[in-house]
Length: 480
Image 1 (spheres, rainbow, N blue to C red):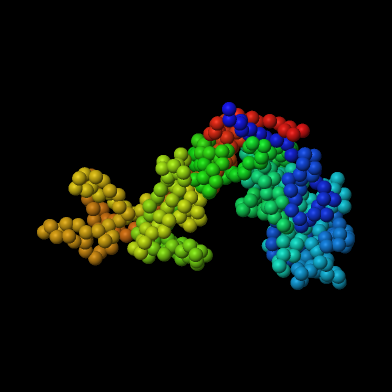
Image 2: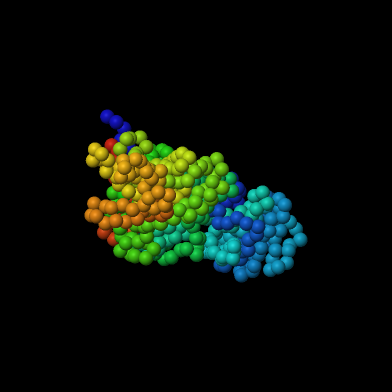
């Protein structure tokens, strides 16, 4: 009998620990054992200087290199930190302190039991954060890191990721997913664990919290998703366009909990309308001049992976799975080949989104030069255009259709004559979905919540869906 696989939601207690943070502000923090504190280090900005002030609670400025206190900033007092060589210059309300500090400069709560909130001004934007601010000099650039309890971190994420207007069960599902996602990154960086952008998860700190979000986090406190006793890679995206995809057809590794799954509830985004509707279905028109600009920009940014095919004449799309000679279940494109007068250039799987600037790889392309030709045997062949093609003239000699003109005339089966360019001038791309298409679809989760699914059912739907042999179990309080 094969060993059963277990898919669990487990509990991971998160308690902010001032002592641990002060002793280990720059060191990797491993996933801690049950009952020990879990703190997340979030990169919230990088630049030449930062301004901050205490909003509520009591804080102490500390020189991280010595652990010695510098000063206790008063609430509302404006402070600025500027890197000078390998050290830091502190400026209080426009007046520089005489002593430079080696740093990192740490703004830490004097009493962690209070509600301690500070404001950080970066690039002209003021954002409020909980917890501890660590300002690090990295090669002469200032890196700001917010260090806070994992539950507070999740409270600053899910409203920006799935939207605070989402149903309660969708918010809970996103909370568990976001918590699982960040836990898998603990200790992987030297100065920080994750960024506050879509590189990891969008994080807006205290400014992004709301009562509804806080309730969703509180009601799922400490819960993470495991597969065979290990944290899963809890990927998620905006909208699957009706069907998620298996991980090997998007990136490289085949994971048993990331398999293609139907999700018709993604269409809920259309019911909401506006921008959400464009995450479900979309079109993108690319003119030849736009395409040339995109290729030039791509080649400048990717000198070792240039698109050097001469004049682009068209595209070929393949939807074959990575390990099977059959189409992807979702219909996603896994290979696009640029066709040109000097050769071809292929791009695979999720890189396709980058090279063409698409919302997803669930798409099709229609060229304004495309034409279907009936051969002598009656077979129909679709061509991107008739550039370089010869036709039989009245005297049976081969000739270029419409001579040297850039377009030609065709008569369709319905007898209507129309003009088409010999070389495409516009490409119409129609697609569905927004994102890589792996794991939880946020708009699908919102749709499932509207249909009455609870957050556990939503998680099970997207990360398991009976796509592998074994035993499925969702357990609370695992390890307690």
